[in-house]
Length: 567
Ligand SMILES: Cc1ncc(C[n+]2csc(CCOP(=O)(O)OP(=O)(O)O)c2C)c(N)n1
Ligand SMILES: [Mg+2]
Image 1 (cartoon, rainbow, N blue to C red):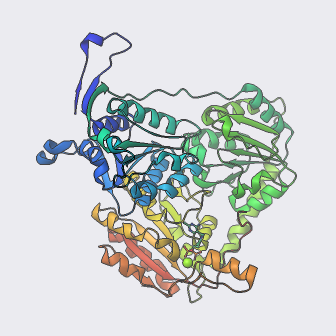
Image 2 (image 1 turned 45 degrees about the vertical axis):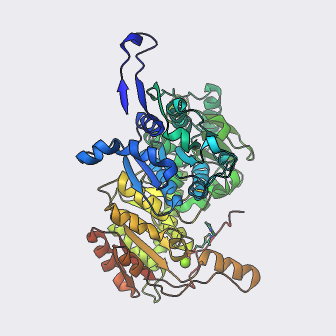
Image 3 (image 1 turned 90 degrees about the vertical axis):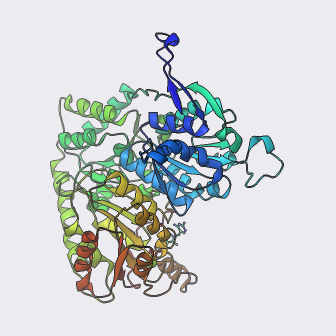
């Protein structure tokens, strides 16, 4: 690829650099302009030009010099997209996955849907059968964008090599603007391999949007009247880089906080305002619930909190709940909105004190934590899943990234693990897709090279991505995997027994040596059956320096005490 300044155009609508290259060069230049440094993929000839651009061509390969973009090749396309999504969530820069035509693209659909539900900025570039043969039945000839119509912000095909840079750059801009989400673009093989000269893509500046002052005023007036408000901090607070504004708003006003998704850790574990452990008391007794940066979906009781009035604060107006009854709503840049709310609250002539309420929730949280101690220290055999968390929690550093992929085992994590830092918790989000685990773990190790990365796996969920331990090994990405191996799909088996008094298709093999699978792939691990051995095994895992699976055989009779089924 060659980029040249066009002196003759200098001073003319800014200096527009030209880029000569194949389609891969143009696409990679657009991604680089948007701060993207990693391409997640699984090989296919339809997309070779993208790899050629990423590595800097044969000259760079021969010279042994690194190319402009890191390539991470995985063992299943869903892992490529989950890794790109996880990387976007952690770095707050749009992710990039490249999928080869046809089955490569369709293998990525569940992960793109996950990004759609999570509002994660992501560009997926698909290969596509060549235009010049379209309709004649070329290998993997499938019109792919329609598959993505309902799960992306935009899905289309690029038919001109000279358009690739601009279209991909626009894709990144669109993906990263609230409401954030995935964009799909496919490029026919003949177009991607063709050369063209066009303007070097640049990153378009997106101006933050202020909330409507009347909406802010309305919300402040609700706060002025409230005696028992609750602030829910969701993942968009992190994604919008509003974690400081959110923490400051909570601290200034003294409103108790319940955290959700990547909003966990914005108010750190141990902060007296953090009431996540007392959320049922908080939600049933509150008179006002302000939900910031997360949809009012099943995870939040569809926005019904007893008698409380509900306010929804989101990044863009299309995200405001259409089904919940809202007493107020505000849409805009979350730092600005939370700042405006704080300023409005500070300007109140009579500022209410929520101290008594916060103390009550603090006590309820402390009681909930105290109630955990038996389970966290359980010496039962088979191991109670709670004991694993009892051993893990004291071993976690403040900046540890904790990832959950599984059913009940991960629900326990949601209860016991309270992050101390924002941006350190990765769950699959409201789409609830099993199989995110290895992709998210790859992403976390790349995004946080020196932090602890802990992947919590159900034995069932593990089957959907465990082969990508191979990717961890090949790319030298050590992570600690902890499996709650109960030999069943517990989150299905227990509900089916409850509904039918019997169950089918919910059993897995007992005590399978998944640690041997990890060993065979070049990692390490061990099986633990004695509760007293969980802690020492975790220590060995953290010290291993290679992907390490602690395969804990847990009690299948222990079901997570669930208060919602999600329907
Ligand atoms: C892709 C996908 N398939 C199926 C499900 C339905 N499902 C949700 S939880 C669950 C059980 C998970 O079992 P496991 O990972 O072993 O965790 P456990 O509940 O046993 O702790 C299943 C099958 C899903 N959410 N996603
Ligand atoms: Mg299981």
